Image 1 (tube, helix red, strand yellow):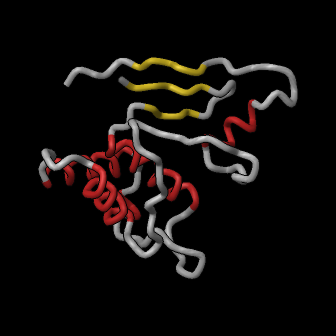
Image 2 (cartoon, rainbow, N blue to C red; image 1 turned 135 degrees about the horizontal axis):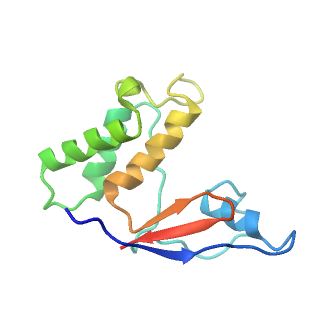
Image 3 (cartoon, rainbow, N blue to C red; image 1 turned 90 degrees about the vertical axis):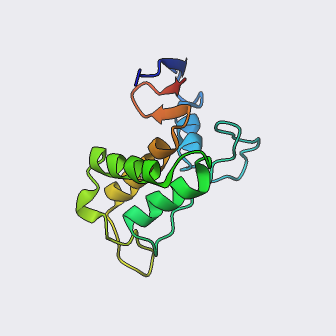
Length: 142
């Protein structure tokens, strides 16, 4: 399969202290209190959502995301292959049967939870992936 070219849509965001670089980064990463933030965010025409359920295992979480968001023309075997590849690529095989966890149920580590979120995006083949570098860069996969 031929790799898709990347198109950088935001690069080398810079400016004086207080101009909003960190604020932009925090908004895109959902680390900012939504008070005072307005507008709508769409990725591939869909509103992003957090579908991580702490009572599901890592594998169940990724499969749930694949089953909910992938089109019907993608077979169940293809979905399973995508999930397996993502878990391998992100080093999640060691916690495949571990519950993600909630505030009341011990689960995966914080780093593993972040990789699960990345895995959800990789399975869905989003057109936009955000990489946190210094300076901030947003890459668009076409």
